[in-house]
Length: 334
Ligand code: ADP
Image 1 (spheres, helix red, strand yellow):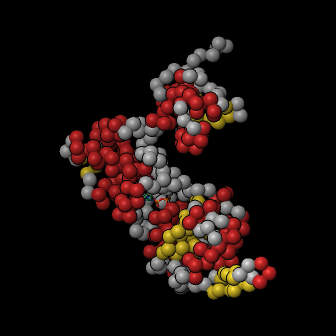
Image 2: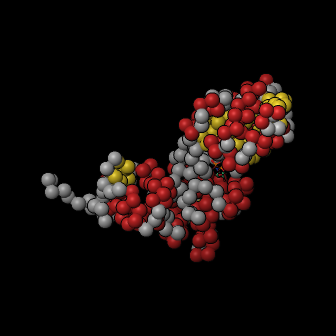
Image 3: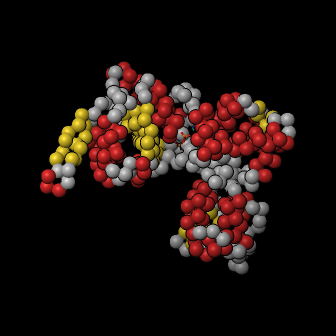
């Protein structure tokens, strides 16, 4: 697993429960989302009804699961957690929906990966708190209507655009989660350090935040690796110097690029003069699969403005040359 990967690994899952903010007040950043959600939840509480269905879109590790738990906590309701890929058949969904309690929050991660029949069942469940369970096959099949308790669906997806419009339209509130600003990540790191009983000075947190790719999950993971280093190689206190030495060991640079990211940039600059070069050629040069370069390395390089995808191929930006400390070649015309 990549240290700077945004998905949760086994260790993350164990520690994340302890690091999750428990209410909206503790949730750092995403000010707009927090303000809007606060209104939605207060209004529902005042009416004494289940909150509107909420769609959370955004990259992995930005706090979608955490927010769904906060919604349940703020509504004083239980929560059930499942994911699109876990729901293969409409029957799986019917079983979950019919066992919900009144007011329960159902968190459906990766909702865009649900099967088609399940998705269609969800439409009616969201709108009317009702499902039709089909019993039998062929001409003898009958639909048995089933009343459901009022519940709140919290759907999570990497991009709202991945959802079919009829599903998207059934959410009363859609929140788009942005990558976090460095100052917000510093606050996440200070908070987590307190909970993990680690001491970090301000500069140490700045150093870790700068390498966290705008993502709290990565910030928390880097913090744990730096803590190990501080305990083994120093007095346990995280300073700028310690953070930077620790993350050098793990080959995560000042901007959060790891070995793979730098390998791609390096090949693009040194072997192809900054491009344009085709994806397949670039992948062969770094000894990786096309998909790995395209889906694992490139999105962050593009987001950081280090690489551009053009119709003629991949091109390095001036920032890429500067980041690797290289000088771009002077073209003959100049
Ligand atoms: P997602 O569901 O979007 O993949 P999670 O909700 O699982 O992300 O969050 C990943 C980790 O980051 C958790 O440990 C969580 O505590 C932390 N985290 C996410 N957002 C915040 C935030 N706004 N403030 C503090 N910690 C956060």
